Length: 355
Ligand code: PHE
Image 1 (spheres, protein in one colour):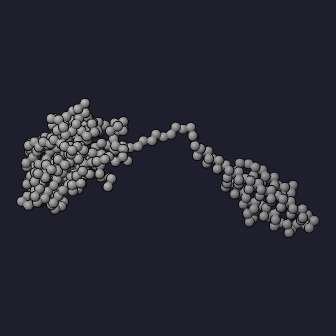
Image 2 (cartoon, rainbow, N blue to C red):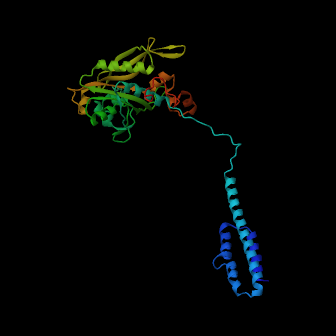
Image 3 (cartoon, rainbow, N blue to C red):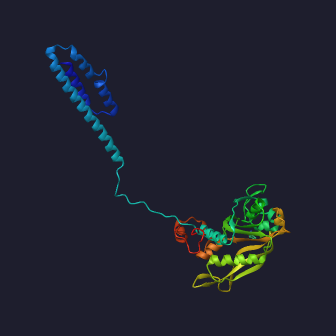
């Protein structure tokens, strides 16, 4: 058998089998590389007797073309197989049911905090924040509530260490201390945030929300406090008239101190704010005690002002008709879907985003 015939038989056989790309490349270079089998046969032409040369050359050309065709076909075959494999993986099953589309809702407490912040910002208050983990000095001592003061027991504090130095803040009032220590008067701030007390029932949750207010300047008096709260409550509940009652009270950090009640009545099973002869307590307030000002390096002979602390959750419950405080923190998606707010739907009295 001639060499050419042998080559043909051997490589035709090989090229018909299953090959991957590297194997095919190897065959190609074995045949047509610089010292490849076919290339060497071409080099032999010159040494072949004139009689046989023509036939040899023509046979060689023929087999060269055949082998090249086979190799090219094989390349196409391998490429197609790869594409098919990819397509197989990317196959889209159009019978699958579509994914649920869930649009998040804004929690009523977040919504209420936003509303409160925008109402106070209208009259010049800026927003401050403080940490949930406080030290006992900021939470009590600086606020004129020394150790053994009975008010400390009333707060049902969560202490975080044996020395009772670190605690979860029991109110937002320590933000007053932080703000005044950090800056110079005048101050006109609100501070919304989480607060903690060891207490739990239908109207108390161990974690709840307050917003602190503080206005200190040269001539701020109780009249300003009343005017400010009156404005806020009317704006918040979106009513023209509101009945407000300042009841004498006691907080170590204010003198005089008051608790504020708003009038309401129940009509057709629904609570109506501002009317009726029932009273509901919503906040504590007073004129900042001179001892507090001294503790934060503000001279009480030159500066004075008021502070207040509002329970946010209770306001949200009243405004949006929610009757169990604990539902705020149950993380029940159906509840949130019902009471939550559409993030793209800006309520009429919500001025924070619309400007
Ligand atoms: N910190 C008080 C409380 O949690 C509320 C308050 C704040 C009272 C500011 C007076 C002034 O009960």
